[in-house]
Image (cartoon, rainbow, N blue to C red; front, side, top):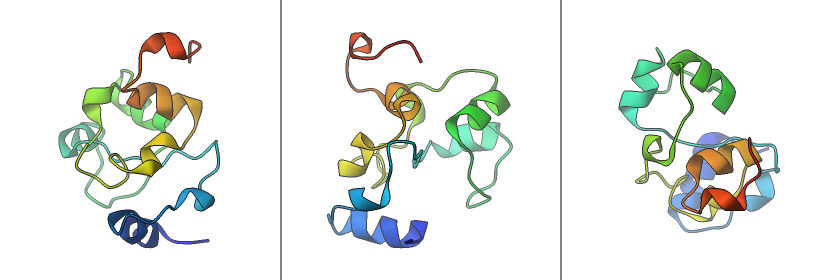
Length: 99
């Protein structure tokens, strides 16, 4: 299994890293301010979407994700759990069942 740093390097080089992700994975990057509001420090760990939302006291929306991250602006942003894809959604809400 590759590390997150390895996946990031692959994404930055434009290589497809989909093979490492399953439909249940939640690999994402939110804006620094969102991460800090959740009580997290930079590189201070990982949280699933549900745990991050619980700490924030609200659901995430597309504006919360860091669109400059390779995880958010490459093929990787089309991979992940239905919950993550719904929160990230650049697509109309009507394409998703309620999550």
